[in-house]
Image 1 (cartoon, rainbow, N blue to C red):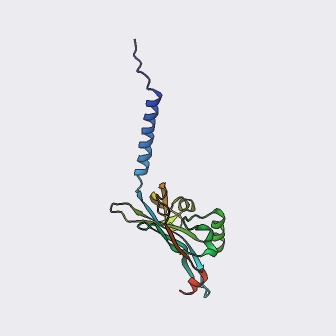
Image 2 (cartoon, rainbow, N blue to C red):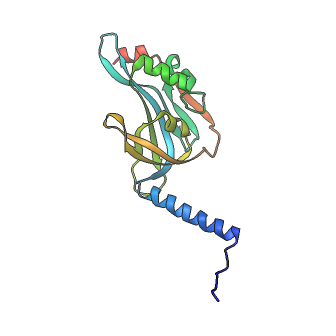
Image 3 (spheres, rainbow, N blue to C red):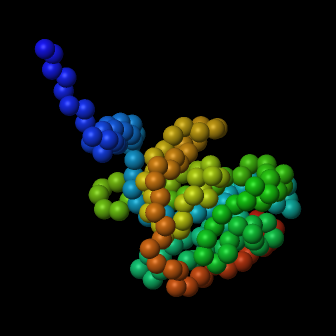
Length: 184
């Protein structure tokens, strides 16, 4: 008489599958050099032409999260990126992205993620618009870098957590792009 082992319960089977799936995913993620940290800076960078005809790269928006006081600092040109900033968050809609591409051609979304503890340096690279929008200033993120267009390293988001506290103050001022590039 042959002996057939008892079938595992549905709960045990699903628990085993979950562990195998998690180990498989962890194996994939761990093969990439990831950094977990706080999102400290988001900026939108373009190439603009001054009145003398010289091109220069400039940030249309730069917002920095100061964790010790839970405050945002920075500057932006409301004429071009006013809809991207609402005193608490920075996101770029499809229509704003298209307007920026039509006006400036090359638009770069830059992010700085500073690691929590450890000896790692900050990740300070370009991001796709989708990854840029996914990250919350002051929130936590697990990221890595990957090769991107035009020999850039691009940010790749693996996981995000929103900011744990509301922003207490926003010290983000406006500026005029044309005045800024002509003064350089």
